[in-house]
Structure formats: C-alpha cells, structure tokens
Length: 228
Image (cartoon, rainbow, N blue to C red; front, side, top):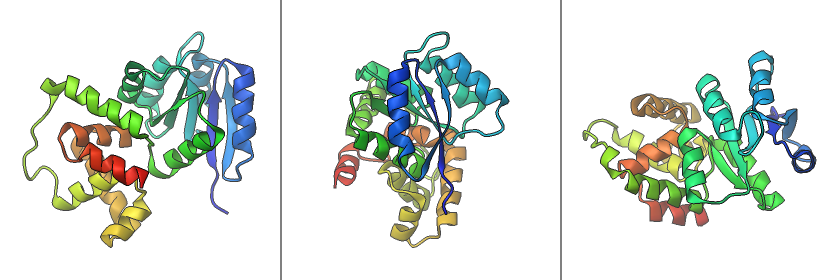
C-alpha cells in the first residue's frame, strides 16, 4: 500500500477544523497526524515531533501567531513541508502575500469538499497547485514588480530544463512529464532539482514565479492546458 499523505490542520475555529478533519480522514490516502489551534502551537509541535507532515492546511487568521507569520517560519525551517493557506479572504493582495512567503496552494474556506480534496492531492503529487485565479495574481504581481525582473542568459537553462520547467508550471507530475518527454521519473526529478538550485527557488512555487518573471511560460497557454 502506498504511503499515506501526512497532514496537519491548523485553525482556531474548532468546528471548521473538525469538519475538514472528517472530510479528509475519509480519504484512504490521507492521514491527519496533528491538529493545532494557533500558529505558536503548530510551530512548537514541529520543533519537537519525530513525525513531520507532508502538508499543513493552515488558516491565515489565528491568535498568538497568525498563519502568514507561521508560514514564513515553517518555510524557512522546514522547506520540505507544503503549506495550503486557508482563508475567508479571496483578495489579490492576500493571495500574492501567501505565495510570496512560500504557500504551495491557496484555498478559500467556501470552496467545495471536492475542490479541497483535489487541492490536497495535487499538492501532494506535484508540490503545488494554483488555479487560474492564483496564476493570474502571480502574473499581475510580476507585472507590478517589473523592475525586479532579471534577464536570463540564453544558456542559463538548457532546452531540456526549459521544457521540464514549462510542464511543471502547467502542473504535470514528474511521472507525467517523463511520459511526455520520454524520460524516466528519476531523470525528471534530477532536472527539477537542478532548476531549484539554478533559480535559487525553495519550492515549486518559486519555480512558477521564476518562469513567469522571465517569460518562460505563457500564462494563457498554461490556463488552457490546466482547464483542458
């Protein structure tokens, strides 16, 4: 049997948190390993536990240490943990801020259970999941910060790395990319790791931002691929 996706829930609203727990625990490939009612409790748990999660689903508005600050700390100290931001606010500034501090995905609290389960599965398999709204916000954020754009040397990335990066941004998994490019999954993972190192990105979110920033992907094409 495949290893289960280990999940931590962090939300100060107990009724909402238990509702998510109930929905996720019904999925055979998910395992809830801890619940936290605030960011401080979450961070302290991560520092002392012997079982780190694959994914944290975290409310942004919590007492003692809010989700944004907790995400910054976790992203710095535990970069392998993927964080799905939970919020009632669907504003562009909120989305941009969470992506910038390292969130792997962004889920509005009025999303459907199907959307939530899909988001968790996508993040578990691919490292991140951005729907078209989030991709558009990233794109707009890059435009508004146009002065920070870097100009790539033509040989900074190999043609193969550019192909892999484009497919990562279109949210294909390593195995899917391998099939499309006739490569082994291990080879694709090697390219992915090289891309992380070359672009100084800590996670897949950083790669997406880098690709949009340097016009390696076309946002419209990416939307069409994701929707098809």
